[in-house]
Image (cartoon, rainbow, N blue to C red; front, side, top):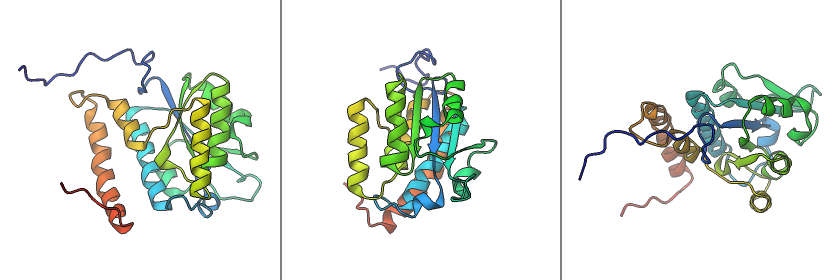
Length: 220
């Protein structure tokens, strides 16, 4: 059998039906202290791990990022959590007054200006700030990919029902690391080390968090 040390030809990065660095945009919505404080479907540590992984992957692969907050200009809320903001150098926040980011003209313009029709999206809460813009973007012809392990709701029920609603409307859920693997696609490519670097950062932290939360490991 021939040894395989070279990647397959790269498919058209703009027209590929899978996510590539050239055909998607990452939208992150309302990762603010006020939102974290009411989430019970998962832990803040778990959310932060996966959102920061998304940020690192987007930065590494040149995926444009749209970052939005709510209520900062109103003086009601603080801005994006520092762990996330620090992972997005040069990315400015778009503040809003409404819970549905898609109803904000600046947010819509930022997505449109990316020139991309595939939107990878994460936000707090799942059932509101993630679901509402997802449904609106789907209705306007975008392909939308909610990141299931980078979000949370005020209860497990509200989180789960929100994902059911989005999937029924045509959304395609992904996870943080699957997003990176889809961008990279082949370990023999020159840019594979970008994913390796993020994974080397990610998995020790994930394993530490898993142990702290009592996750059972398979040792077979």
